[in-house]
Image 1 (spheres, rainbow, N blue to C red):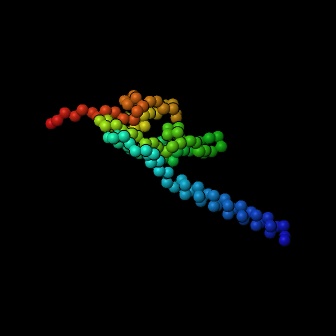
Image 2: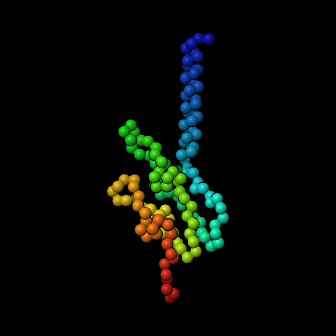
Image 3: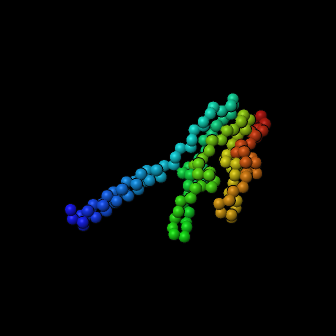
Length: 133
């Protein structure tokens, strides 16, 4: 067998493998993974809400500019989970400030986060009192 034909065959095989790997990666990034379902039944009256991370849109990673170009980093807001399950006890609602995540981005400090001052990091607050009309 001619050495040049053999090398061309190896190169063609490598290109096919790269195309296959790239196409499967594109399918994975086409839509965010679903937030995992709760593993156990909630206590009586507890409401569970599935929340998608607002920073990474449920992917669990973000793209950042590095020295050599764009690189993928684990999302620091959701710790790479893509979201969370919020368990809200009776008489409470999701916190309107942090949308249930319990933390907010600090102003002007990049990717650092602070506990939500309204819910103290719980993600929910007591249902506001509404007088009857």
